[in-house]
Length: 512
Ligand code: GLC
Ligand code: CA
Image (cartoon, rainbow, N blue to C red):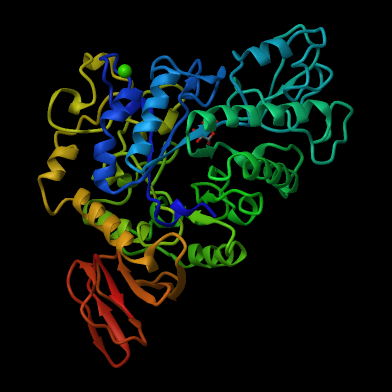
């Protein structure tokens, strides 16, 4: 297992919206380079960057037209390399976003694959052999080519699905995973990985990693495919790290991923925490953490020793954390995010409580996601310090709220969320029990109840974490006798007759 993951804390950067240095209203590599100091200062030692490759940007770059070339709006391949090198000089790591499931319709492979005559790319995508037959799935592209057939799409209609074969081919046009077409796709995928790992990136976040092999309900074919990729990495790039957008760690980690995210889709009940009608971390105190914990426990057991289950604060596809969890509630939420096993992932701006911007028109295929992708708010200067472009040129409009949080404002306020997050990261790093691979035992996680308590452990250290996001005091049976907390927020606990009562809006860490 790659060593640095032990105390990795990731920061997700949506490059469009982070920092613009040439006044075109769109963030760029140089902007990220300038802000490495900030990310390092927060305590994050690893970065995941959303796709930054050539693309018509119909899905914010998840529609790639050249995998080997940085999108000019962010800079050149050389500048990307400089950014990676600069991160390495600080002991930081950078993961790029790998989009293996589909390309843009503008990719030259797709253009070639639309031709009627057979060529090298005929089998690069999933095509039926007649326009009158559609493949089952997310829909298809039809009537757009001389080639007779319908092409399966993977997500939006302009994202044709690359061909990794069918787990059990049934129709004549469905190819087996080991047929020449799918094999060539896998070889190309390796070439892409080799290219960027060769330039120095530390690995990849893998887009829709669960979706590659078709007709594969249980994921067995896709798991096998990723196992092969892991073998390739072990041979050529044993230090490379892979994190999957999958949401089912029992499958993805069996497939050889080092880490998997819990997501707003899939069976994890992650949404119960922050994004549902009554989130557990809301002060209303009407949430339920028990289903999340039950599934987490099962997965943790099934994946023991294989890799990490990562719980993100949010990402570019979900509502901002601060849409449903506000003010001091966010501090308790971060105490949870930064004390669970697995590597934490902080979505840019969540550390200052950036808000979901309501009512925006979709930008580059963002739709409802656009409100979570607005420019980073650095300070009170023009465009919140994001860009010197005219306001109308900004990639996405800024949060218009007069009291929008900024990095500068929060750095100056010792009671801010920024400082809380920074201190929680430092605290996590000081305590082996709290790091990625430490153990976890749930002490109190009852149905519709507060507080929530668990013990993290490693070597000879054991730390009890108590979280009470609800606005009301809450009690639980506790066998430990608790001394002064190592760290806490929101008041003091009382302990009597084997029961601990904690104030509302509280978190505490205790050595046990
Ligand atoms: C993933 C990405 C999302 C994108 C989709 C298609 O879910 O996170 O932003 O639109 O895949 O690539
Ligand atoms: Ca720019």
